[in-house]
Image (cartoon, rainbow, N blue to C red; front, side, top):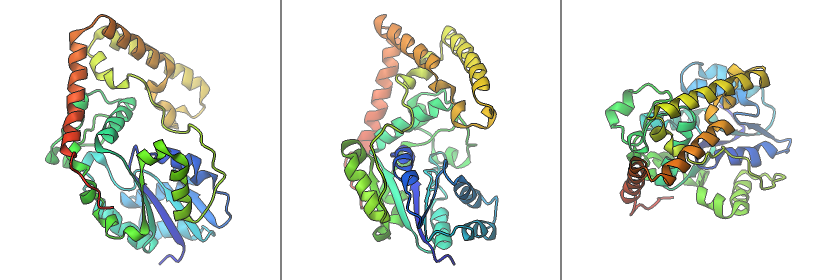
Length: 312
């Protein structure tokens, strides 16, 4: 049983995880702290994911932990809590496993208004290659989610984000948990970071900056524009040019996950901007119908969680 002090940041996705990792965790210089994120000392994060997915055994994972000399270990990865695409069906198993491995660690969990989170998550998935409407993306039924293969086409369901249900294990031990409201990061980043500093008992040379996942204007309209052959043709041509450019720029391009997101390139951003401009200028009815459906979907989620109260 490990006698070190563990703090595990487990997500959720789209709640400021990248910001926290880059602005706080990776700037900790205290010699008593070991930090593992998907960018720093990433082997521990990867091994933990492999352990969860039963690709390695507990003995192998513990051997890696034993190599760490620092007495305080912070592990941060937003995918540790579970997957939106299977309805977090293994959330209890993950919790039990982390309690066992780390001997009742502390946890950091980010949360966000459900409609805002899901819309942000949808746009992130579009950047990864999803071609589907927002309505379809959040409308998968339970049976489908339990059995779907997770890939760029994967969908979820808006009803899975009842925090009182999915986070009940952590709510029951809330004296060991820091729940971070994404809105607090947006409105008062210093207070947000200060809460993390107090909880982790470590300070850092924090300076506010814009390290976060790149937001692409009009990305939510990609599924609409992709119905048009001219848009598809230009998009594919641009992606071909982007691949050539990145192949020369990055020697390990095929293995570089973050640089493979072609839709973040300026060429695609320009294509979306021009397409949206013409759709608005020409007052294309189907475009406005698509926007209206998106608004109705957001309203549906808002209504579902309208009277929602957090138990933490």
